[in-house]
Length: 157
Length: 312
Image 1 (cartoon, rainbow over the protein chains, first blue to last red):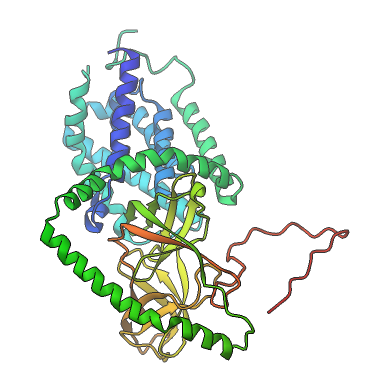
Image 2: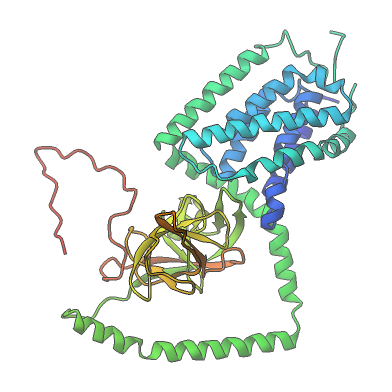
């Protein structure tokens, strides 16, 4: 796969992830909705860390900041950090079976949400309730599906 | 460069700065942006531009729902349309009856208040806006509507639907704006109980069916079913518009404050069309002229003392 087409692929799937993150859903479904964009970024930074670096995490996070109206740079920082972790650990993670990968992803999402929670608190935004942590679990659970879906578009080696 | 590789055969290390260095760079950038956004120095302009970029994607995301709504209304049957028409006619008649005495009441009110001339109408300008997207999560309760700066919308403009106050414009873009709903946990609206004019503040709960009245004493005179209207304090909403109805009061002996919940009258989750309303500041029911979060005035220079505003 050429560089350009892989860039287009990453950008398109990230856009798809963003749209899935934003599609309006009923209240009780929206709480459990996995953070699709974060999962897509995690996928590319573990499976193809060369085409999708920390820059992808930063830009995707900035997009989340714009659409979710949070403090500008908040999601960007959290997602860039998780992307960094994923890139550092990508060899370790790729060698694991899917089930263990899910646990890694869950841990990554917890780190991500924790950073958001801390920044929310510092900047004086409400940090209501345990509901915000639900997506870390659903994100870990849906990881095999993400791998199965995105794995069709490229040839992992 | 044999060794590990993926679809894209570019080595990870030895090309450009290391991941750690890159992350440090991005983190510093993010922290800088956050700092300035928190201080409110870059946000206005940048947010305006970002809102413009985001709007096409918001339209795209909401398009399936819009399409579905458009199709279902195109395939409505003749009989259901006739029914709807009859219901609307009946409602119009009711409203006309209610409004008939309005003019006389208005004049009577002006006389009672000892005003020499008739009052200007409270609503100076209103426009209809369509809801582009709606977000109702525990952390954020927002709408995006298809009216922006080009349509004359402005920040802190009141947004209502045909049942009551819905929220206010929080951020504005060229063709769209973001509305913060009264149920957003970051929103508070000054209200009063119609029955006894008791004033308090209704705070959003993050649940689109609920507002919280957190600072009413245990012995305050509220009960389930009381209607709450806006009190006109706070500078955004005019006095007397319906806001919510109290649905639960809990008083516990060991607590100083009662736990009061209210349900918003505006249909927060089902809103498709909303009204943006600009009020005439000359009307006594209009919101007090100073907005709650006004930018600091420039320090008065000794040469040109600031004009003293007349107090009424």
